[in-house]
Length: 439
Ligand SMILES: [Zn+2]
Image 1 (cartoon, helix red, strand yellow):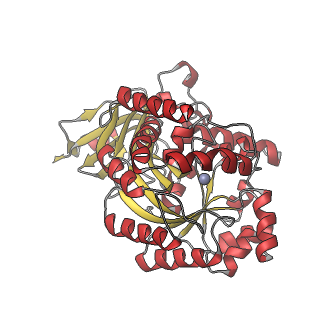
Image 2 (cartoon, rainbow, N blue to C red):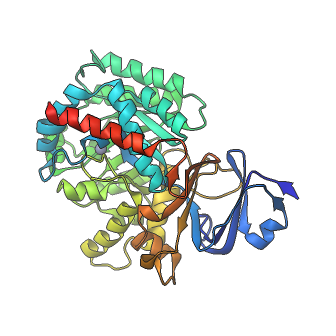
Image 3 (cartoon, helix red, strand yellow):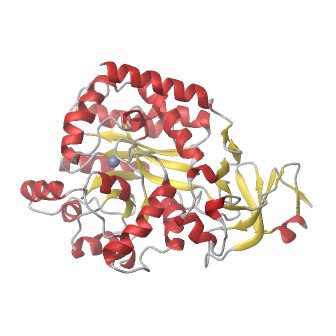
């Protein structure tokens, strides 16, 4: 018998590997930060022993959910400005507030609230695009959450962040050096969008990402306004423009991709670009609906992102799955579009793949890191149960998540955080609200 650190039992185990079949009476063995084995409990109990056996009676175990696009610290602007178009929301509300409040201290505090919300909702990894990512990364290491932290890049200076464009690149290089070979944190280049970042800075960011073998993440083809501006400035639609400046590759994950021509969909597939689908943010800002069924059919890897809480307004991938699975059916008049298995695959394995973390997380397989979620099925809204994939996509809520493990450590235990004080995190957020509101 081999001694392991944890044996996690579950009535239902979804590994998100192979044919996506459901393992009944399943178990996962974990040693250190790594998954040792996964299979049926009778098989596993014959091979492994542990002092920590988590009894997953009436529960399901699946890989940690992956949020492939957010601006975590913007959680402090949740509900600050709603019910208006993207440009007005950004230019009249978000940017003026960021000019005033965005500091290392703001990010340090806000990241706690965002991480807590995400972990409690079963999200074990998120991709960020923001500033002070060194501060965010140090906080994430303390909390024990996985992050792909994108150093924001703009064409213009930002008070307190970058006095000139070179500063953005200096920040990015420092971030890459800081998180090199880190188990939890991956540094990333995050030029903002075609309307805030010109071709020279995109090319420079791409060259830096290639040099250091790190991912690159950006907003792309989010609104019709962006497409019109791109056509005016460069004579090309956003994805074709990206092709012309050499941006399209497997290293790139692009958030939104709402307004795409058929040719652009083909380009994304050919160049192996990952798409982060942020349906709730797109719906709320009335940006439009990304052609996800077409993208999937063309072979593009599509995953989910929440975007920032200021435009969503929550940080729940379960919410994105449910919304996307329904909206795409209605829009395409096809009830098979984004079925429940596809939705969970997008939220887990596809997410890891588009971030370059496919060997580390996104599915339950020996040798991968132990990023796992245990959700209770003992709830009225999850009863009766015929199809576990259906329940996770259409009925499950963040409150059903009981236990969350990241890198082999339990960070949410029976719904409670083990590395954060929830009362303090909420009090700090409320104190910031008072300051922002009083300004
Ligand atoms: Zn965004």
